[in-house]
Image (cartoon, rainbow, N blue to C red):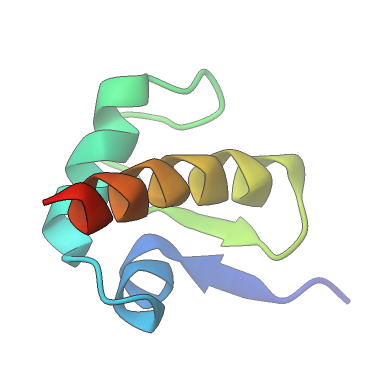
Length: 65
């Protein structure tokens, strides 16, 4: 059975502001995410992978500051 995760938990786990992460996700305009829906995905799904990619980008920016 797949386990769900969400944007806020993912962001907090690596020290990123959840609001900044959700904004970055919205900016990507993923076709699988509907406007105003929660950012909840199953672990190890394609959607989770896409969210991780955005999170890594934010982490790299944070490191460069």
